[in-house]
Image (cartoon, rainbow, N blue to C red; front, side):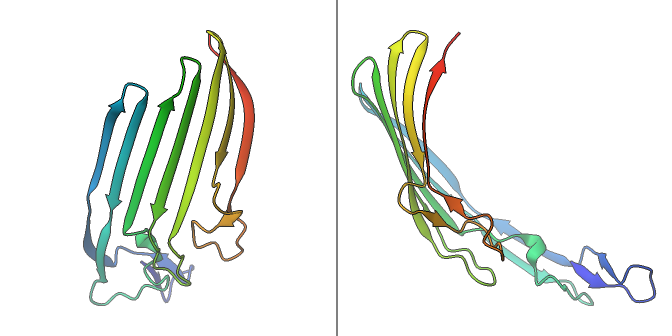
Length: 159
């Protein structure tokens, strides 16, 4: 907690004025559906119950316990279309974050296409946050940390 400390040089101090617990589940699966197709699925949940200890007042309104989504779902699929061509695509759902102001739930996608030109050289094109130009992932009041769509092309050398 962040609390007033009257009579000290610094008017505010950090205290251990919160108690409680958190719980959740994280589970992942990976399946080789066909020799050329792999599918990964995941879920992550996080629930928190905290309260201020008697005699404490948190000036930061429980910001110290963090702002996390209660549920996150993930799906990723990898296709080896030929010996040289691989497509990897993912979709994720991130639940609403209870903060002030709240951050809405969102769905986002990532993808990468890789072509193995030689045993030592791959060419690729990849994109992140492909469904939206931008979206919030944290309670940034200036919105300076918006997650943005990103597309890259490049080469990877193996040695």
